[in-house]
Length: 71
Image (cartoon, rainbow, N blue to C red; front, side, top):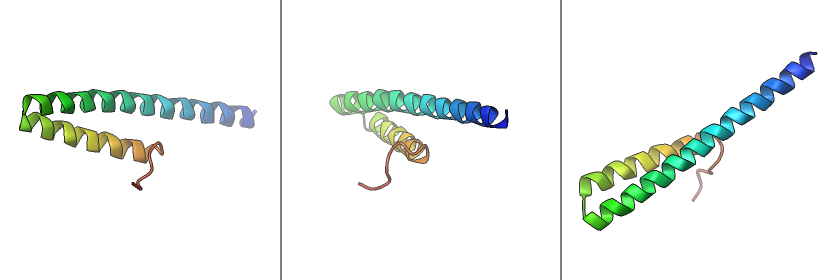
Protein backbone atom coordinates (compact mmCIF):
# COMPACT_ATOMS: atom_id res chain seq x y z
CA UNK A 1 0.00 0.00 0.00
CA UNK A 2 2.82 2.41 0.84
CA UNK A 3 4.45 1.71 -2.52
CA UNK A 4 1.21 2.61 -4.31
CA UNK A 5 0.96 5.87 -2.39
CA UNK A 6 4.59 6.70 -3.10
CA UNK A 7 4.06 5.85 -6.76
CA UNK A 8 1.00 8.10 -6.96
CA UNK A 9 2.83 10.89 -5.19
CA UNK A 10 5.82 10.58 -7.55
CA UNK A 11 3.48 10.60 -10.55
CA UNK A 12 1.63 13.68 -9.26
CA UNK A 13 4.94 15.48 -8.61
CA UNK A 14 6.17 14.64 -12.11
CA UNK A 15 2.92 15.92 -13.62
CA UNK A 16 3.16 19.17 -11.62
CA UNK A 17 6.77 19.62 -12.72
CA UNK A 18 5.81 19.07 -16.36
CA UNK A 19 2.96 21.59 -16.06
CA UNK A 20 5.38 24.14 -14.59
CA UNK A 21 7.83 23.51 -17.44
CA UNK A 22 5.08 23.87 -20.05
CA UNK A 23 3.90 27.14 -18.50
CA UNK A 24 7.45 28.47 -18.37
CA UNK A 25 8.04 27.56 -22.02
CA UNK A 26 4.78 29.26 -23.02
CA UNK A 27 5.83 32.35 -21.07
CA UNK A 28 9.27 32.24 -22.69
CA UNK A 29 7.64 32.26 -26.14
CA UNK A 30 5.51 35.26 -25.13
CA UNK A 31 8.48 37.29 -23.90
CA UNK A 32 10.62 36.35 -26.88
CA UNK A 33 7.83 37.63 -29.13
CA UNK A 34 7.52 40.77 -27.00
CA UNK A 35 11.28 41.30 -27.24
CA UNK A 36 11.17 40.95 -31.01
CA UNK A 37 8.29 43.43 -31.29
CA UNK A 38 10.04 45.90 -28.96
CA UNK A 39 13.20 45.65 -31.06
CA UNK A 40 11.23 46.38 -34.20
CA UNK A 41 9.65 49.45 -32.54
CA UNK A 42 12.91 50.53 -30.93
CA UNK A 43 11.41 50.54 -27.42
CA UNK A 44 14.44 50.14 -25.18
CA UNK A 45 12.46 49.97 -21.92
CA UNK A 46 10.23 47.16 -23.23
CA UNK A 47 13.28 45.35 -24.58
CA UNK A 48 14.98 45.46 -21.18
CA UNK A 49 11.82 44.28 -19.40
CA UNK A 50 11.49 41.36 -21.81
CA UNK A 51 15.15 40.44 -21.39
CA UNK A 52 14.76 40.40 -17.60
CA UNK A 53 11.68 38.19 -17.78
CA UNK A 54 13.40 35.83 -20.22
CA UNK A 55 16.35 35.53 -17.83
CA UNK A 56 14.01 34.79 -14.89
CA UNK A 57 12.12 32.17 -16.87
CA UNK A 58 15.40 30.60 -18.01
CA UNK A 59 16.50 30.38 -14.37
CA UNK A 60 13.19 28.72 -13.49
CA UNK A 61 13.67 26.19 -16.28
CA UNK A 62 17.20 25.46 -15.06
CA UNK A 63 15.87 25.00 -11.52
CA UNK A 64 13.22 22.61 -12.86
CA UNK A 65 15.95 20.64 -14.64
CA UNK A 66 14.71 21.43 -18.14
CA UNK A 67 17.69 23.50 -19.28
CA UNK A 68 21.33 23.04 -18.56
CA UNK A 69 23.25 25.96 -17.08
CA UNK A 70 25.99 25.38 -19.67
CA UNK A 71 26.02 27.25 -22.96
